[in-house]
Length: 255
Image (tube, rainbow, N blue to C red; front, top):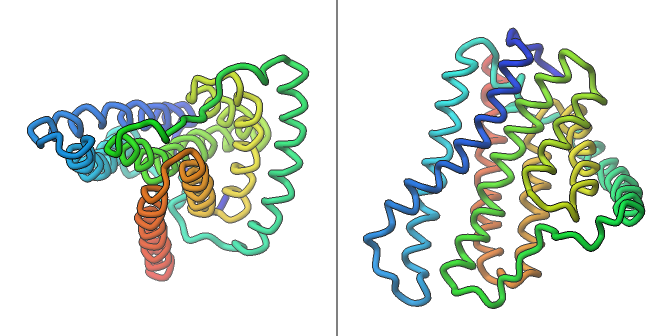
């Protein structure tokens, strides 16, 4: 990692878990703020307003937690908000590593009998248009930022300083996997999380992991029936990643 925090590992880990909590809590004001909006065609307008409200509310909530728990003790680069380096070589290595990790995880899932347990797959084809938009937006735009910030940023970074790469990667990835409440992907997501921790560690940034996470969710949403919403949300997500890359580059050059 490029930056060493002046933050106790327990405080940093707690901040990561709180980020997850406030990200869930952000849905409440977003939904309530759209209650007065007419249902319209298959609730599309109402859920569109929910999505518009959800993004800034989530971002402000996460920022408030970071300021409250960590304050000025650590630079953004410590939790991975940094301009990524060695991106091309890291991504090229990421795919074979991820394939190998997921192959082994798939075998372990079968051996443990978890292959028949529920997964995170959602069939969007039968959902009203509004719900398609809402679920796709949550998965493609919100989830990658929140989960990578919380688990590959705060939790992994905090634990790695105290315990080293492997304990930190496994613990943070297991926590991320458990968050999905689906036994069918417990081992697979833990394995994927470890490789994402490696990517975060090698590039010095969570941004490549955020981008790959969002790309995967966009593809999964599209094949699950998200159709045009996966394309729209994917484009919005790409803009947020591009903006973050530009911002972190400016921060790096200003130091």
